[in-house]
Length: 65
Image (cartoon, rainbow, N blue to C red; front, top):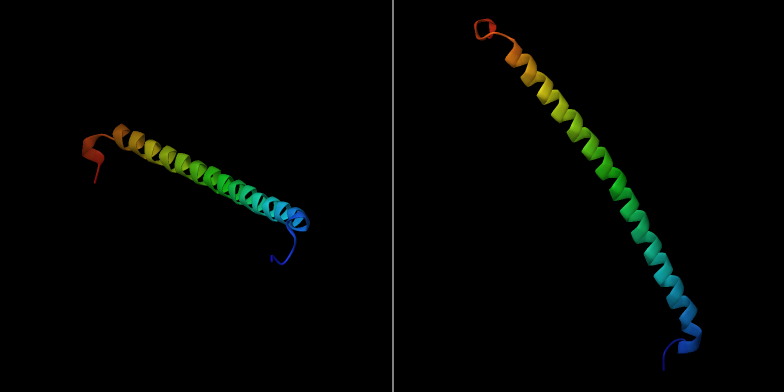
């Protein structure tokens, strides 16, 4: 015999699923925020690299050390 009859356990099972769903949604939100930050950092680094390449190409070959 189960610890709780099935008709009494239903609300607890539903509550457990809702808590699990809330935790998954919070996790996804946190990961989306971190992904946004990483994408921003990568785009900033790409801009820095492009700027340095343009500056390097603008300097004549004789002046490079």
